[in-house]
Length: 220
Figure 1 (cartoon, rainbow, N blue to C red):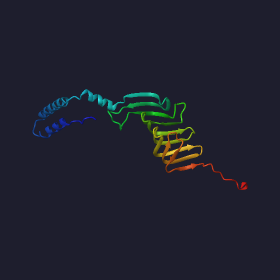
Figure 2 (figure 1 turned 90 degrees about the vertical axis):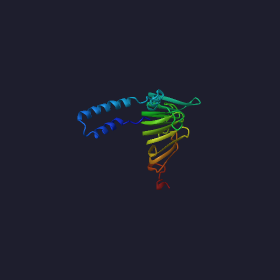
Figure 3 (figure 1 turned 30 degrees about the vertical axis):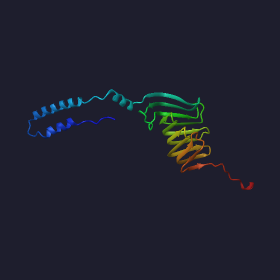
């Protein structure tokens, strides 16, 4: 993105000193000053980047929009399908027709995605410390203290998770812990529907009440 630094002046000064063992010290000092002034002139006379290039560089390092304490609702056919609330959101735009890196929101400082509705009426909610959200594709990637809670109160905890509205999937390959009325399940990796109603845990461990109770012998 940025051009490299030129060490022409340093190289010239070093060459002058090394090759001047028999020169008077004052002459060496005058020669060094001359080279320093000349090097400044050389550096200062380089071509100035076009204004368009400077603007492009500025766009590459700054978000196009910053929203603090923001809340957004996203709709399909007039129905709210998800809502996003965050401490800070930054809109980063792609350059040109770069479809591999679409426009995304960077969310930081804590956020909550309300899945399937508004803040007050939804099917599940996903919270984390930071993440990226592609509102066009309905895809959110979350990191740090990720918590997903469904309508039944079942709670998933992990450190990284990807939620996709289009594919109706939630997935992660990190260690997970699920707390429910039946007990606690742990594992590494999970795939679930976006409402967190049906899920599969990879390599599960933990305690889980299956609802099977022993019948006393005197009742047999």
